[in-house]
Length: 235
Image (cartoon, rainbow, N blue to C red; front, top):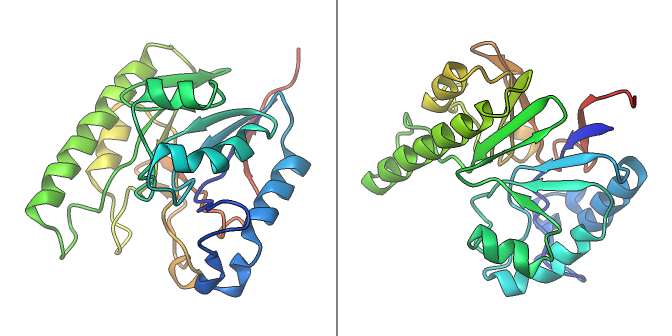
């Protein structure tokens, strides 16, 4: 059994109503690249963490085409919301509308073998020069959601806790945000995040901060292939 992470698919149906190659030649046919790599890599016994920005759809009903495409792929699928996941709804409705094909982390936690999983979307860093009063409210709310999720994760008494965010837990100067402090206080060992795109933004990304391993899982950063986080020997 293996644990993978893979995010920021930015799907928009088939054929795509919002082609992503306007952001670079590497995004050409990205949907096919993602689906092909998933099928080649992931088996039914594996788990895949998706750190947001799954579909460009505005409403859940419109996202079902993309979600059903993913639901047909092998593996257990866990999703945390991204800033472009406007289709996000109540967990109960999302599970019902997708026939329980996905598990969603929202003020909650899950476990995979000896690893507990917590998470939330996150938001822009509190050190941002463009921060607004509305941003400050959202930042505090997301910090609270992460705290609650981590408290739930601790109840599993697992060997490790992984935190899943969409936004990175550091600012443009690669300085840790309050989210790092919260994660550290709960013994998080690894943080999976997405949101960052483009080769120009992949330079000097921290691999570790505050003793926590950081894993960027944006699909273009991973060359549209899932990232293996860990694996367990079958007993």
